[in-house]
Length: 192
Image (tube, rainbow, N blue to C red; front, side):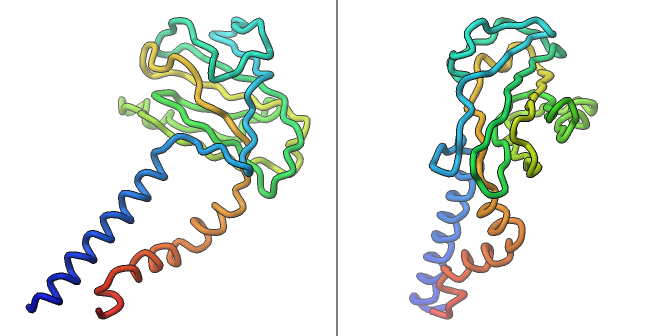
């Protein structure tokens, strides 16, 4: 193997490492608030074990501090949804160590974590992306969290409504295109 070939391999490995780090960063970073994401900052009703907790509906959700709670307690966040004029809207938010259920007008539309918790596995951090039906405007959103650890969460991260149009198109309908595009960056794939 000559020096040019070994340099190409090293460069290819470095580029693949950079691409892998980039995708890892994107998948684990906080929710990016941009023009396509409308945060639901205020107007939340918060319940701990069915006891109403927040007396100020204008308080920012991310500033609300949860009181002590125990594994198995329930935390409910309730918000009335409004028109956000986005194509393919969906709810996006993060949780830590909590079984998560989403209701729209008291009809369950999403659940996550119960199967892991029943097996005794730690749930860790989870980014939830739940598509909303076209008729979501004016409906009540309820996020029900059942912590699997004592006091695993002190406050809330932003909860937003975002357009899933680009994300769905790029990642779910054409994952092969994304993977091949990344591979074409590599010098070995181009025959350099």
